[in-house]
Length: 281
Image (cartoon, one colour):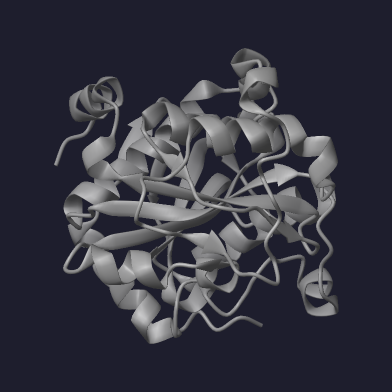
């Protein structure tokens, strides 16, 4: 069982952290109890292991929860449907996002992303910036077609970033499948059209590195490539994110991962204005 007893930065301060955002019966907020973290982990298991093709450990399969050693140090953002009640009489968790700030990564011994990418130079160059790693995002299938669910998660992330004065968001995002040749179009598009700024140098570790430059730029049809990308990655790109050097095959989750780099200073003005109108600090 993953240890979620160690208090995170927000536990015990629910009165200071009301609902981050709401849309109809849906609300987004941070988990404050072990039971709420369990609900996020159960949702992750349902999506990643039962609906998709991730491979659980025996402990995960027994508890029907997705967990790792970082969960105890992270904040867990939940989208809750107040109109749907589970068997325990609690509103159903329909979406989740995991967030780890730099101060919590120091306690955890590093970021999850550091297992796939060399982020040392990026961290050193960030200096006194406040950082947050995003990951483990998923939405219940019946809610995935509702734009409001993903928008609500994004609004929650922006409230979180504003309240903690976050300067940089980053993390791993996934494409389904582990055959780079089958993903040549989206990987090559990301490589040619959305590289990280020169000099920051986030690169997959040599033993994990998978070449993304698989097609020449002139053979790429951007609209077709965008269509082949998961909605999450498209959202990052449209808002101003960029991509690190090299992909990584994740056999456990049956995915190909790419590195997302997203300074808040480069956020597209349309998205910034949209969130500014909808967020009350």
